[in-house]
Image (cartoon, rainbow, N blue to C red; front, side):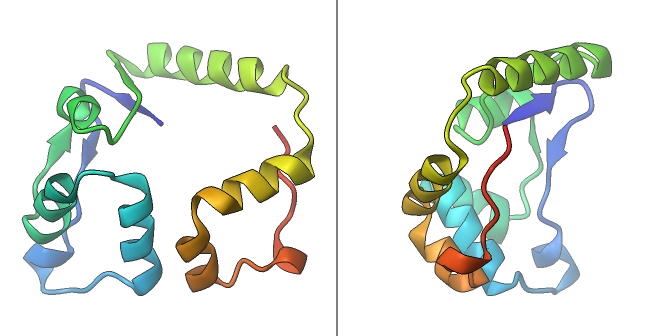
Amino acid sequence: MLMREDRGVLYMSEIDLGGCLPDYFTVLFRAKIGSGLARRDVVLGGRKVRGREAVEMGIVDGVWGCEQSLREASMELAERLGSRKWDGKAYEKMRKGLYPKLCIVVGAVEDRILPAKL
């Protein structure tokens, strides 16, 4: 995941607004943010996380200084991944294997998932 350094921010406002996250979102956060402390700070603390801090917390892979550089980095990543010519079905199964609880919560069963088209 890539993020813009100068304007990007991760902020889960639900705690400040008195709302709740749906179950699938909680499961998604558990799958994507490995550190329990980071999850707690973001979800239960309403912490606003900017680019560099998001990298340090392991939430994003990198940050870029402006919209143009982020766009270029995103396109470069997409081209690099797309050139690999992965088998979509194999990619699908591997990805679902990485996030089994999320797949269950969102109802992503074998016959409902479209293959990835990288």
